[in-house]
Length: 77
Length: 150
Image (cartoon, rainbow over all chains, first blue to last red):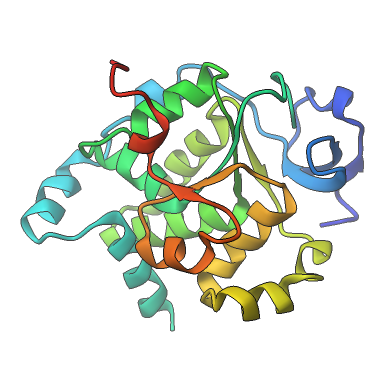
């Protein structure tokens, strides 16, 4: 990962690429690797409820999203 | 990372918040993601969250191309930075894990949240909240958004 990453400062993080970028995070005062993905302002609205078919079944079985994560971990063991 | 003013609270988003959104569940997870997109909060999560989302979608039986599509959409959410785990994040974790007794899975979220000095972890996982609340306050979307928000 480190070989593919670029060293960047906070001001230079707007270009698009498929690899992680190393940037300075002023809040923590540390360098971090972030995924440099294209941001889409409409993406949040377009994707709300796209799995609603599953939601009905999960509601019937009283399964919460937190349970789904735990189940996924168990089946990977 | 801080493409909007650093005055906004920085929130670490747990996997269940994204799942709430995609499942269209009642509650304010989707509202919170929209508020982050509007710049009212700074959102961060880890690459590990994408892995957990993908694992859940696989468990639900979604085909690979649909899983990829959803993961790509998460990456596209505005004002949410997806941070990779870094060896430096692990340096002070042994003591923090002893202090909190956080489980291994949750520790992978917790260490990123600590490293990035977030204000809150947003989660509905009571186990995570119980473990790390004394270090970083865990909140639900409903606690963050005013009741008058529509």
